[in-house]
Length: 439
Ligand code: ADP
Ligand code: ASP
Ligand code: MG
Figure 1 (tube, rainbow, N blue to C red):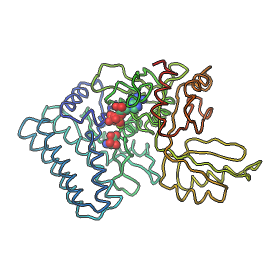
Figure 2: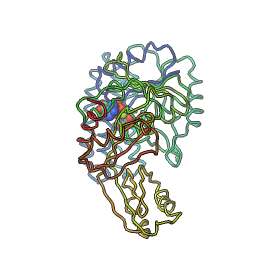
Figure 3: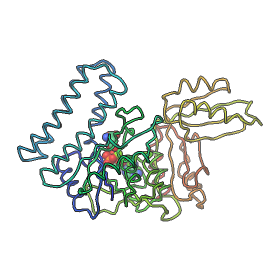
């Protein structure tokens, strides 16, 4: 079996859905297709939730109506026959009735998750109506019946595998399956999600759970590029990456992949391919066990970073100091991305401010604390770059005028990370593009 995942822009227009239908039919092996919501939908749903959470019901109602007319328009071009049009209209009615009902319910986090789930439910059901109109045999697999996360929000591959295998056993005569990306059930059995961009993660988890031959991530660009194409002028696709390289790039900000989407495929040894829906014959990027070569492959940037420096003379020649500091972050379940230490100070970075105030309060007894918000981590990624001659020299020659706040070198053989003020990000990425890639 194989997995093919299509992102928001790949299903965002009726003609794109036609293209997806062509790509998924005629596969050599049974295929599970994972779909995102139509582009823009999840952002709209976030907006609706925000309005509701701030008691702006009229504003929420307006946003719901705007989204509904978008969908009513969408189906006019998606399907032709009155029967299919009627079915598609029913799907829209069902989901927008739900959104209109929640206008009258008091807002809660669980309700927020229900709202966010509507996008993927709509896209998969509408795609299914289109396939049916075309006479393409397929089966909808409800992700909420098999995608499960535990009480730490960690996906449970074994449970997903058991549930999905059972489900597939009841549909042995089918070879094309459609399911929702992003959405899942949590340990309380409520509707939940795998965080923004989570459909990639769904695809990788499903691929791991069924031991797929390949996990194809179809998007709007021809694979992983050497730098962020939204910011840098000239970028080029990378033909092959190792799982380690891809995982570092995803984690450190390459938006094409959800930050956690590589580990399931890596752990269950499923090769991943990044492919372009708009240009299906382009090579894209293959992500496999082995790196194609050593040296710099790509640069990525992760925004919204906060740097915390704890300065204390008690650290001098003391042991156990770092443990006590790290325990504070552990207590608030806040991952640390970068760490540097000197004899009397430790600097570290976090990518969420959710528990910042509580963390700072608990750090106070350890020494004087400095906090810098609005920082960006720029990561230079490539197999064994830490040992590749001249990389560091070229790096520093390139960014001589950039105010670097922290450097992480040697933690991973595949990554060198710099912490810089967010305001310097674009300039730094552009400089690295010429300095490291000659572009
Ligand atoms: P999808 O909706 O298919 O999940 P995303 O918008 O999440 O697509 O991811 C694809 C986008 O990621 C591209 O359009 C591109 O602008 C952006 N991107 C950021 N960094 C990279 C990179 N290094 N390589 C390729 N694309 C990147
Ligand atoms: N629709 C979700 C989002 O926009 C998940 C995804 O597209 O991967 O974040
Ligand atoms: Mg995405």
